[in-house]
Length: 365
Image (tube, rainbow, N blue to C red; front, side):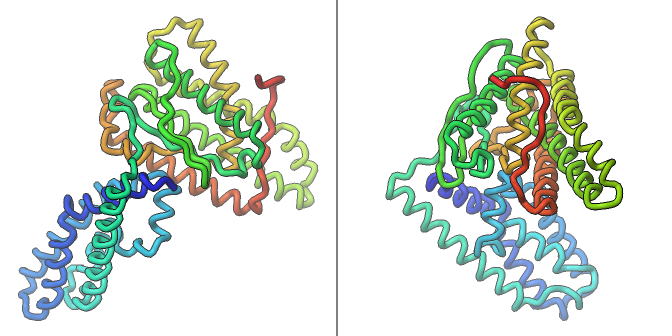
């Protein structure tokens, strides 16, 4: 992971501690727990209700939970996980039921307060060290939304030509969406690259970013449906109904092609464009062609998410079309995360073997 990205994450977490007044609220929770035996029932109920409302607001508003899946997983599997804002908020939310005798104990809350203090101290030291080392944070153009395109080596098997082919298809797909939404030909902005797990930062104007979010969600649904069918085929082939499994297997190229075509047509139908119909049809053909490779990559572990640097400025996407709201943007991001998890579960059930999805059509140039 880029060192500058870690600095940004540290600043985000420290910022949420301040914005949500986590230290103060944890101390208030600890004080209520310590004296609850001497607090009248009504007074306890009112204070517990206030704490739960605060905790729920943290859970609903925390930016950390909107991080790309791989970065969120990295944080939640780290030793800092117990002191992340959302985790602490859930402790308070569940720790103060209406029955005061069932509330979390003050010593237990003290452990979480110690975790929180340790996390803040170490993250402040990380930020200071980054400043002294002149580590540069990732920067996204002011009027664009950044995306992380994560390409695990299982996608291109360490073959440079396969990596180039896969990356170029995602770039071409984004370029098509830029033209579709703006009416002008352009490419996404390259913001950074990282080589541990190969990650490429690409940025788009708000309108194209919103359309790309819709495309990615549709492609995730294509992959989930297709892997579910593959699972069914494997089960049929291992049963007395193996002939039906073979028949279904032969139909898979056409099924996958139809799913990709339907996904692209759905996105285009929901998009506003100033282009003539003839050019829109040409873009549709290009999106389907590039979509075949992109869907293949997603099935083998590729993931896409709005960068942590852009999470604070996704609101411009609400200006590109009257029907787009911040709630819809947050909802589609959450849907993408759920689909990514379901796909990961299906890959495990399919024993994690490389997934080479069949596609129809002739040459992909």
